[in-house]
Amino acid sequence: MKVYVHNVKYYETDRMGITHHSNYIRWMEEARVDFMAQLGWSYQRFEEEGIVSPVTAIECKYKRSTTFADNVYITVDVKEYHGVRLKLKYTMKDEKNKVVFEATSEHCFMGKDGKLIRMDRAFPEFYQLLCDLAAKAVDS
Picture 1 (spheres, one colour):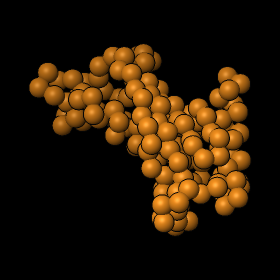
Picture 2 (picture 1 turned 180 degrees about the vertical axis):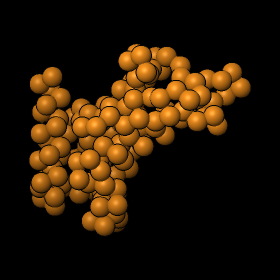
Picture 3 (picture 1 turned 120 degrees about the horizontal axis):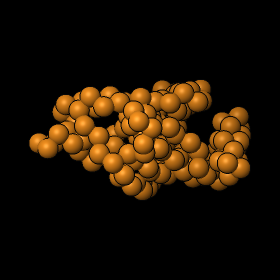
């Protein structure tokens, strides 16, 4: 998978010139949207298929600060997938390849009616893709 790159904008920093902590959560979303599109499942496709995928949990650790104009390299991996809940892992690194932020987010897949979707039945190819990526995470 291609690494997502975010360039820190001036408005994302505080008076001390440090990136405000809330922006890392936004970058997680940017990287997640890019990751899903690389898998062939853009958020536009989700919507066309009648799927919503809300965030149900986030856990994060801030390791180093970033500042205006820094490039942040974000990798997204499937950490766990059990058919209903998807757990993604994010690693953000600076230009010196030092980790600046690590996080996970959990998601479920629902229809627009608010009911959980059994992805193995409704979208078996996507289900298998996520299972395969989760198995790789366990092996590594």
